[in-house]
Length: 398
Image (tube, rainbow, N blue to C red; front, top):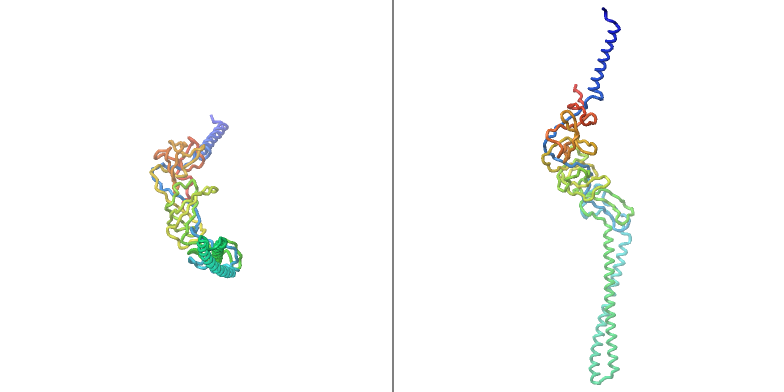
């Protein structure tokens, strides 16, 4: 009996459908939504870290000066230019003295007159003192004569009146002399202040340095305290470092490290933390430290950007993990640990971290636990995973 062609055709179609379903199921389980999630894993290993603090800063001068007049005036001349090296006490600029010389001459003349007046008052005091001495002698003699009834009481009273007048004249002369001395002291003080003001028209370098800016030219009018020139001490350069507050643990004065200038990216300059500022930046949430060069670079610019790495003491041995393995689930920090071939989220307590991407796991893991580092999609507990060497295979070299 020959097979029915219709039945054969149906059987063939059914077999093809089964094969197609099997293929779809195979593809779904291998590459589709039901496929295992590819992950890379590492082992929790015991070791020590050499943590470091990294931050970015700008080169600044520790010592700098703004040189300007103490009173308002007009700039007469500027003797130096930007980039010039100056020495302490060197003349940098001069202000127009205007009428200071005339005022000094007037004060000198007033002092001469006051001194002449003082000398005249001194002579008056000497004359009044001599008259008082004579009056006292006459009064004493007349008192003796009055006791012997050789003169009348009226004559004695006249002599005593003469003595009182002499006393008053002497006191007046003493007061005039004291007033003359005060006038001279006042004029001398005014002259000293004016002389100092006259000396301030010469703007001198307060220390050795380099001129960085020239803020006024000859003929410009400046107010008191306005800088004409700005100087810095090139031997006092340091880096004003800014470090994220959350990564600044261990930042203390004396910490050693290195500075890499933006203009010299291949050179590391030894450095040390000179000072940690008490006032942090509340806006950027950064702590500020001043890092000094152990050896001053030959070529560096103020305001230049710099990267600073500060070395902290090595940590005690602990379990170490890559930073990339740390995840957050429902407000908890932890890792995905493989329990057999199924992932489970395990909360961990983290410790110090290093700049090479490793972090301490102080609690929550055991040595040699397998921990997921990368996954091609978010993980869930007991999800199907497939451990691979890398999520993306590198292209083969030709």
